[in-house]
Image 1 (cartoon, helix red, strand yellow):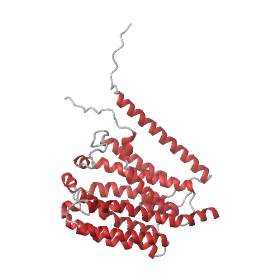
Image 2 (cartoon, helix red, strand yellow):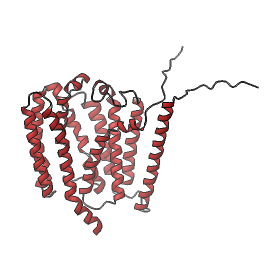
Image 3 (cartoon, chains in turn yellow, brown):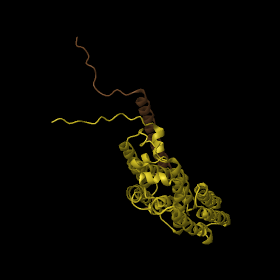
Image 4 (spheres, helix red, strand yellow):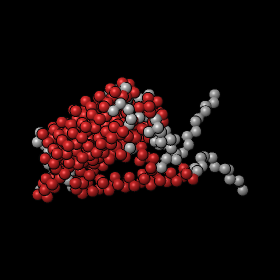
Length: 305
Length: 54
């Protein structure tokens, strides 16, 4: 009896392909929100330990991205937006991406647990597992609520940053979690309105594909009405100062205006693109305002200690 | 004198060799960063490196 062995070609994937696997733009947002969680946390954390925590969180986020690209290679190949990614483009074998993702995830969690604390490491492990297993392998292909529930993974980094600094969780980081959680649906649905045919071709049950564009615009508006006051909550509850309050109220009002325009628009992609682009700026400005609000106090505390 | 038999195995193309070299350098640098990180954290935390909050 003869056995035919399939020939595995040596890899042509370069460092750039492995970096692309980690979704660097998503990583940068994760690191930024984690940094804010770390900085606004009470107490004093040595800067080297803080940087170590951020490095582990960044690598963990990259690992989650690599695992997502491993599992979703078939969907990515079917969509114009993602067909140039390393695996569908044939530059990197799926098995290599899986090994890379698992190795990075294990390393990030272990190093965070050994050098910082176990609570932060456990939260990082839970985040990676939630994104890779719950969102990527289960929700994304089976429900139009995929990015709503799956958005919890993207909302956890500020909680991980806070846990790295304090060893625990509190109301303030959970507020930041809720802000990102309720920001995710209008952000991603605005994108998916722009790419409905792409998602339909790949068989992904995004809300515009399943329920239509009108219902999606309505849901974006509803979530934005929830998001705007949540964004202002840190100021309203006394966790942040006036600067943050101004940014949150102004940004929230702008988000509502854009969501109303998107809701009224019946065709054309301008309102979708504007909503998507501004949603990124809105989240960045919120977290930047928190940082600016708190950094002078944090620095003063560090030098006074 | 015996003739040398042609060696069996895979011969990498130029592109594959370049890719493998770049990956190897990246792995070496990453391991180096990890070593330096552990060294610096040991200096920062002192003898009780593994003493940390739960």
